[in-house]
Image 1 (cartoon, helix red, strand yellow):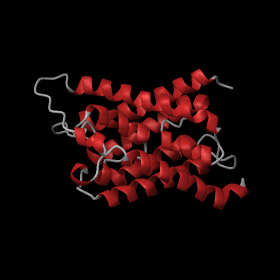
Image 2 (tube, rainbow, N blue to C red):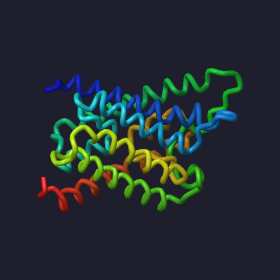
Image 3 (spheres, rainbow, N blue to C red):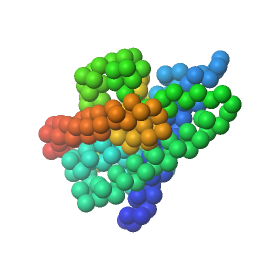
Length: 232
């Protein structure tokens, strides 16, 4: 059994990697002249961070890298509530450090113009100018689905060794759907790090990207338990 320090370290590193890799792809590569990776590339980058992090660090901490996922796993009976504060602190700290490093890199060239640092938002701060209601529904529904996939892919009856692949591909699909709406959160830590170094509006709207993913995670865990828990 891994010690708490090892678990927290794994969650810190995994969330750092998710935030740096995913947001870094959006900030540094998505709009690069002639070879920009675009929406598909950013979505794939987020999925790859979770996939690689899950296999490398999942055996230590479970590979949550997301406060909403940790909350959902507590509700789903996969994690002790007493472990939750340490996980969330490590995840948020990892995302903040990642955003800080990304900010230093992104501003390290002449004429750098960092506008939003891959922050999340709604209304005027939404990539597609979607409303608060649209953003709320998107984040709740997609985080709920994410939790259902996580719980199902890591259940005892699931094919061994494929959980990380399913979860990573699910996150890729989530980004393909929701980047135009909110720039995709489904992860309060990922939203918090860039918001601290982005425009002021990102901090003003950050509350939504804590409330909606956590509500969605709870809903997903409850749905999974009601429909499928008795089959495990």
